[in-house]
Image 1 (cartoon, one colour):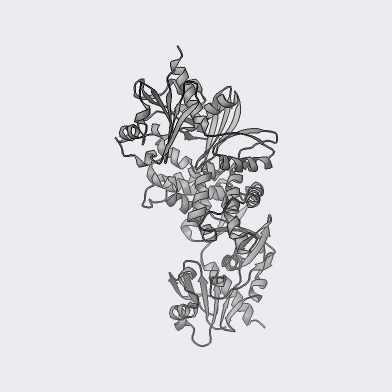
Image 2 (image 1 turned 135 degrees about the vertical axis):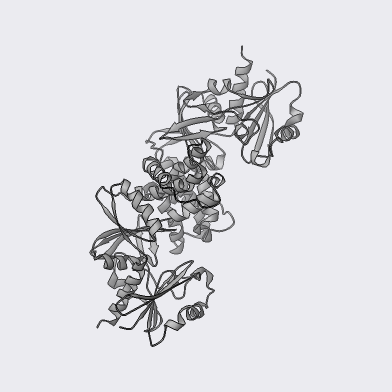
Length: 295
Length: 295
């Protein structure tokens, strides 16, 4: 198998890795050219400028993420859940046959409404491969966190939680922004856990968020502790809703600092964590390339 | 008793009424000069310009609302709950003795954190007087909704819900704003109730809010229906958290259009509504004036 170009082309960022035949990372690049910054019709030239030098010798490029959305390079229609690794590997959207393909996202119907993911499916299958798991509960924290159930190596259920976005809205645009410091202070683990605890006992974020203001008003928390407290309220609210049981285990896929916050929060529910870094995407794309090369 | 000047001086607005001795409204005024727009030290002149002509003949002026906050005209320290009408009437903050006074707000300690209200206490006691109730569950919907329990004519518990603010944040500043129309379409009662229903069954607003996007993405709701749907999600989330039982009754104090939304949502829980308009503030301030004039 030739070296593989693995791309994670999201809403606000474009990451790429050149992978050796055995999947090891030869080189990595990150650019700020998420799909929102690319005009229609400009995807080929942005790709060529960013990764053209890697595309020598008839190499294959596989792309995960929002590049497959209606606003992306080429729409890759969603695969309906339950869906396994074989389903997404078999339904690539080819931009250039045999050369550049986009991995489809997943859709699910739950409680009468649809939910979707794009990019996370590749991370999930990559993480399963890295950890050697057939069944798992996973979370991919972020602007729009995904909680995912895997059974028999198939994604059986998932849901989106707008936690990162709610935090940013409350942090920057709500009345709470008036009492929070403009600059981001260092993470305060105690204040964070105080927020998680309050979310766990509280009646919902619509109510608990206001405590960020009153704890400041009554001088119970200093201004520098408030962002971590608010973060704890939001992440605690998300975790509380997952109906986790003591002794459960959750795979957390994401950057170390945020993953550590989830690990700290989940410990309060007696839930253990298996962390996986962002290399899960490269592992997932490499596995897809292997299926294309197998007879 | 002489005519009374009754003021509701909030964060973003200043409303005033001239009340006859029997409490009937002689005249009303509304100005955009909420306390956020008044510089420190300028409260007397803003007051004089707005209502000086009503202050003839040694009349009394009573003010409810954020004018009693640290950023207001004169701080009126919170009364701790449980608190009755007599408690707030006895603890007025006098700006000019015998002439201008501010009604104190209430504070409560619940679940280890404080909560506060300013202005709503006056509306609650006014509503109880208007309806002749000694015990009640009340809601004052708005940017920061208040849910209030009254037992034996005392406020025994209350809590703040940032529903109006969450709606505005999601409506204007979140990713959902991209699919929602810029202009405010007419209220869509069906879409609103669809949102309330989904909130009722759903696992929390962090998750259900995302359905505003996916229902649009899958063309299940037209763009003009999305604001009402989102409003239903937020109000449904607030109502769901109140642990109401079928057959309960709730007093809704507020403007008719918003009160009607709450009535529609509460009906889903089998809860009946007693609506009270914004005259509750005038009734509450008039009752305080009566206690000052009684021997």
